[in-house]
Image 1 (tube, one colour):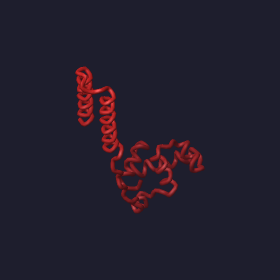
Image 2 (cartoon, one colour):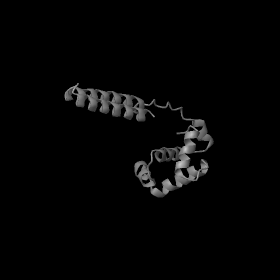
Image 3 (cartoon, helix red, strand yellow):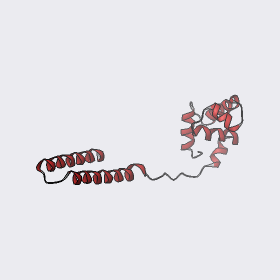
Image 4 (cartoon, helix red, strand yellow):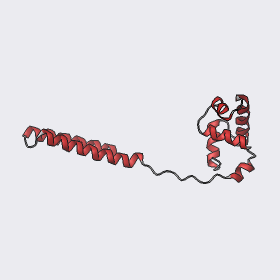
Length: 131
């Protein structure tokens, strides 16, 4: 809705500038300056509203829940890398393990978190505040 109103305001500004140029009331330089100022203000407004959203304060990691789920420290490292979006091969390279070991850790995590997919495991882990 905000963007629609901004577009409408800019359209009205262009129509006003066209009318003022036809009537000869304003010079072209003044009209261009007014349009530039309006676009600058619109840009600042959009920047403040859309790009600077408040950062969610993350809650502390529930280490007790990690222990309850019996997630090992290495499995937890793998879970963090999965949450980062890395593939099994990339995790293996980063943690200096074989890819089959990573697959085993991922399988164990899926069972412990009662998840069917990696993305679901990450979602469950976030809900449990362990990520």
